[in-house]
Image 1: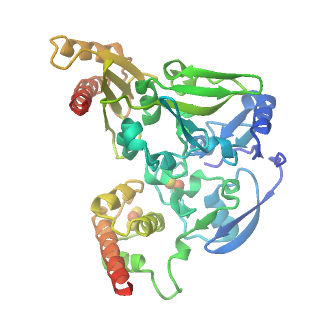
Image 2: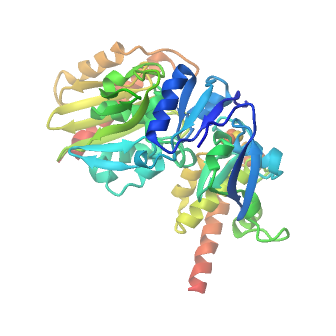
Image 3: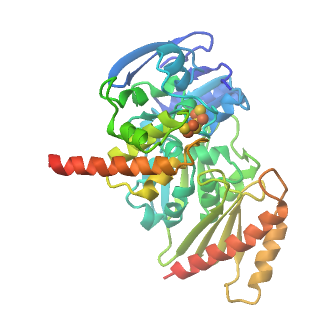
Length: 170
Length: 275
Ligand code: FES
Ligand code: FES
């Protein structure tokens, strides 16, 4: 692959929430900025831009990752999911989102999209996730409003619901 | 908080990578998972003219066992080594370290070698490599060399890596039969950099204690047995020999106290695990 000049924009193609997207970006464009400013998906929030707060967390190839620590060029060919992919329909929340609402897992909502993407990845990978697992995943996020307890309760409730769902479907 | 501009190269071969690094000299940087480098770019503490993305180089994405070493290639993400099936058998120290290493969200992208290259004095992976007596394989267009971990880290975020060189792999010695290993750290928040971290090994060669977060690089020291009368003096001497400093996170005095406390606890645990 040829050297990509800093002064120009270059194409990058990846899957975003199930659809192929193609964008022209400067090399220094962060994934968080590509999502928000170029593509217009502002659900992914930006707090610190150095990997500390977790607000920008998205899923890259199924794993939660910091969009602010990822160059757009690094997701070439990858599968990226953002918070916009969670709700099955604009009027219907996903079970995890609904649990957040029921348990008051959010107040201002700034940290919420990142936390949802981490927990969604956890519950897909480990449907039996317990309080410890949930707290470990949350340690990568800062929330200044809730005190975290309601977030843990929401996640536990969603995990429980998901397990019930699976047994009824089995 | 946006990176300054840079040229970008994503080579398909190691030759192409090494040629670009040789031509770029001090202005070229290797990009792997980006979890240490991208924050530096965002804060403009690093302003390379060229970034060379090595994550498409398949040969670097392997974990190999060679003799009594586990060789981790420069493209292996931390989460991949964490999930490696033989980890708790062959690298029990790392199995204890991983839960403390950044967060799930950064381990998913960050590489093992990237953390070694970044050489933060309080980081867990450099500490583990030094404590286990590992080594780093370096590669440039004209040269290949292997450097002992203790010689590789030369100071605060400074390593023996020369211009035009890249880390090709790191070598962790396999756990010795019957060896005991332990790790503890104290930090402000789980997953943040440690204020002080200690790693201990108890095996047929005796007791060793690795310490991060105090000196400008991870250090390792031999120690007498815990029930030896010399033990308290020895660990106290180590605490005082390090260049502990006061900073925003902790005082020098608190750091020395953590070395004595965590040091004793990890050594105890490692000795207990020793079969
Ligand atoms: S904005 Fe990415 S971690 Fe804070
Ligand atoms: S809900 Fe406000 S920061 Fe978490």
